[in-house]
Length: 554
Image (cartoon, rainbow, N blue to C red):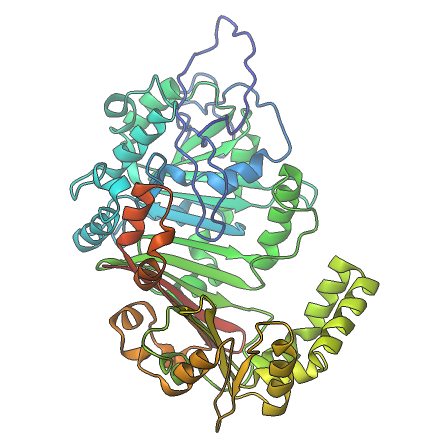
């Protein structure tokens, strides 16, 4: 990890200035925005008056700390939001080191304001069962096996990973951090006072010993340019050396905490167990802020479309034996599930040697319902003429109308399956569904002129037709079954009979099928060899939905 989150300037100190050493917990790689660059994190400052939200007097024995003024640079906040919780990411191994949030005691949302539009939290002290499952999962991967044991202090593991990356060189974990740093941390994104003001990222670090925190934080916070205050069981930190942002956050929390916000409580209750980590965000409110920050930082194009949809989303990362699950719940989504069909038999009824598949119920109705928005977006992106010309080209090539004929072809059951490579080197790909057979025949005929001399094979059937790139695979899919009985499928794809959308990837099968195309690194190959399957499902009614992504190991 490189670069300072706040890019602090370093003015000459006056005689009365108090030097301090930097304390920079690492940056977090978010589960709903994977791939954000690592950044150095917000450091903690000594606590002030527990109850007051104004600046304590200069002679207070626990003053509000403010480091050197940061050199403001557009995009610095998005770096914090994209990365601030990475204290649980093992930078040198790239592996997750999360633990359960099932214990008692104060949660970080209790010291963060109800006005927050995005929130995430982790806990490094799980229940015994969850910790054992987490460590065993992590130790399946060679990169982590030598770093984590079942009695590891994951805070120390993360701290030492930071030091290996050149951070916190002058900080002693046992002396300066361990005595006061608790096991929980959270971060929230709080809107500015006006629409023109940048949002404020707020970090909450659990404190087990307020006295030790007040004593140690000043000595490890050199060059921060931010401010912290101990509130209840947490040190709450924001950017800005003058403490104005912190004052505003504390004042907002006094009016109502996130933990007591009705929508937050409703969403988290619907999600169920917090699991090993949890996050919540209000897409309609958070996305404009993130898009603005992302555009300013060069991460997202200005005015980029909402990548997270609409409504409010709560997610939890949970360990389940040797498996890892990301579960989510969505409330208030503008896009709703159409029709009444479920994927069930359409996916589980594929041949048992299927390597990957995705199935969508009511796909035709879903396309028709969503087409106006899709067309609007494509016209805005491509230009009206380009869109019209491209659409006409597709319609002429396939001999169908879009979206009506295409929706008819999709029907109420639409599945795409992949079975590997055939003996002739052609990919074994098939489309299985109950769409309009006349339209499917047109597509097959048009496709035959674009593929191999043998063309596209079409196997019409009662309520289940098959289009495939080869005749052999069309026959195999038409007659084969048993995927739903495979152990890897059962472990990774849960409640498939209730799902509106579901998918499955046989990781171990793909590795075996493509063993000659092994990863460039032996270590990467060893990591992949420990994975079994990946499955996902999405279900729901109206504007509410639940989803699950499960990664299983051998």
